[in-house]
Image (cartoon, rainbow, N blue to C red; front, top):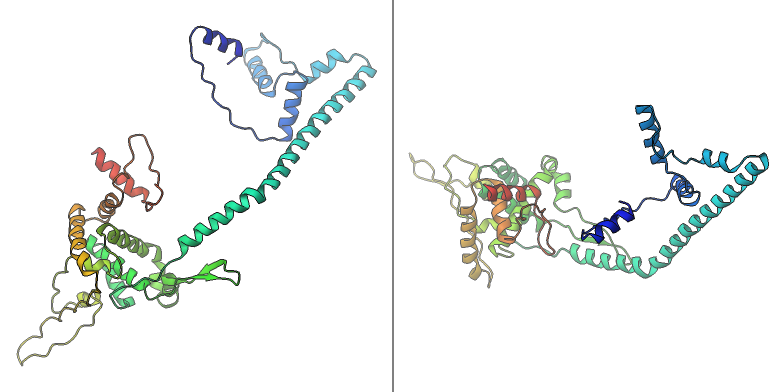
Length: 358
């Protein structure tokens, strides 16, 4: 909008909003166009293109004819000496304009180089300290023994049966994490240079079939971790201890002992009688100070499982609402992760928004 029009509108009580323009990258073509428009007062290339397109379409040239460099040259240079002098003057002006712009860009680059030791190095050091503190993983503890690969495979086969099955698989993976090495690797100067392989390296070396589904099964480990956080439980109590006891398996079923981390034991009986079911595993004794909060955590776990609808996405949504009740964005807004809160998958937020609208 022209400045005269803006002043006219403001005088008549209208409010004119001036939107900031995005910065345009500096190129050689933009420098040349700026020289022609601002120094020689010629029309821009965009106006010339639009004018001649309209002239070719309508067959007439009504309006302001573009003021080009050729017309400027023909009007101001009649003789050969005038043409040479005008070309030399234009070359000198354009050279000064270009040199000044290049000097400005060079000085800006040197200023950024001078600021780097005073700001960017300090900022990088601060971020490295935060990353070191975030990646320092303490040693995890659990009351369960190390699960075997067969136990994990059996839990994977039944993981989609119910949310409890998904949580039991995640609990097995959390138990396995307590028996692998995933500590940080430091060099001689104390800088972090890597991390031990952990569960991923163990699967890659000894269980290639589990390694092929690593990203999928580790999702259940994250769900089990959030489940324990929502229940208010802490180590060394595994998440599976907060779930209700599984139903008794049939005598000829071998899945239940595998899920429980036990081996089937034969029970001797009298002649003509069938062997009974395997005895239930004896839970390990709880350390002091843990048994008090276990009953409250189990009651919260029952409430969470009652809220979900028997699907994995509903379980994730129930855990999300427990950990962050204000996670559902308002109408027309997008979800933004809050500082100090766990990252929530986008599909869970979409599911919660759809449920709220419904």
